[in-house]
Amino acid sequence: MADNVTPRVRVPRDASAGDSVSVRTLISHPMESGQRRDGDGNLIPRSIINRFTCDFNGQNVIDVTLEPAISTNPYFQFDATVPESGTFQFTWYDDDGSVYEETAEITVT
Amino acid sequence: MRKTSLFGGAAVAAVAIALAGATSADIGDDEELIVNGEIEMIIETAAPEHLQDRLSTIYSGWVFRSDETQAMQADDFDNPGMIFVDQGLEAFETVMGTEGQSCASCHENAESLSEVRSTYPKWDEERGLVQTVEMQIIECQTERMGAEPYGYDSQDMRNMTALISSVGRGIPVNVAIDGPAQETWEQGREIYYTRFGQLELSCANCHEDNYGNLIRADHLSQGQINGFPTYRLRNAGLVSIHNRFRGCIRDTRGETFSVGSPEFVALELYVASRGNGLTVEGPSVRN
Image (cartoon, rainbow over all chains, first blue to last red; front, side, top):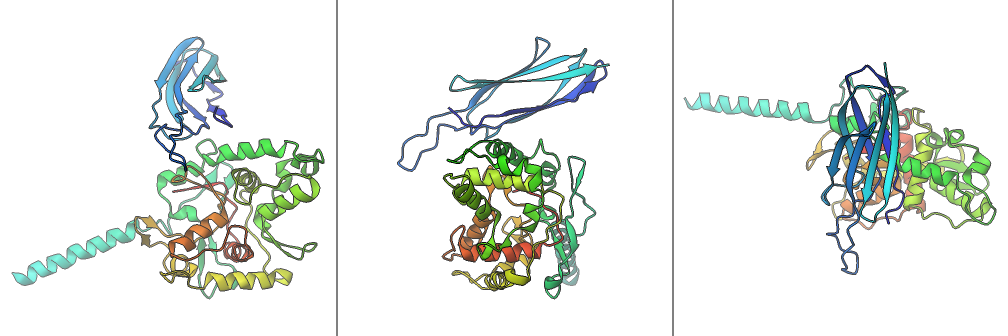
């Protein structure tokens, strides 16, 4: 179980219909690769975020598989076209079964 | 013919030197650092009076970093150090110890501590010594909260100092070097100019005589500590002031003072005073 996992997202508050908006996400996570050894020579078990998804009003925007080589505190930035007002739903899936969720509202005028 | 080729060679060398000059840190560029579009940082200013026979201008370490690293510090979302500020804020509001108190019980909110980072290390009348922010936190924990104190360089401590620094961003550093703190300050200056280790290097040899020049693939800064605790990309975590001091002395192949030792407290006061006039930046982002 990774400690202190806090997701953070930043989405513009409003946009015009059909605009492409920049979405940024960051989650604090150690992303332990499973390759390292501790002081006694034992393998430190792998513990990473293995999947990240973003949906907008129920429609999938991005679905990412993460691998152990990705460094600590994974950061994603991507563009999304927003046709209407709605909610971005972000989900991170941890190796230990934990699921972290965050949402962000956007108003389209 | 031979003459021409010699001349050609010299010209090429001159160009190479000029190029090296252009890339050796961006000193004197009209760069500015405005965090979140609102906190204006002083990244370059006249040296404080006590330093003027040595340096005319002082620069924040931010000036010496690459454009990409600089940009990370300009926005809290891109600054990974802010993750730890969030964790510090959580601890700030959490009750610890036998007295049933959190930091917020006395200090209300973190913003009430905005003047702390810019004025520490500071003479403590009650205890009769110069205290760092870390020592002050430990004093609160042991004497007021009845709590197990944080380790001087522990993750919890760095989270808390990052929080305290973050609320003081944009305020110019102004540590007192006269009065009762003077003796400690002079001890710190002594350490600053003392050569340590097998390489026989003093702080000044790199950070006063050679700032802006390359040390291997990296530009030497003036060694200012206004940006601490610093998020170092190579550590993927926060680095405290004393940890950085220890790293520097270790790199001279010397036996270092320990984190939290009176020697490092004195050195911290002196180095902080060399940055009087630069703004508090912590948690800054460095490579």
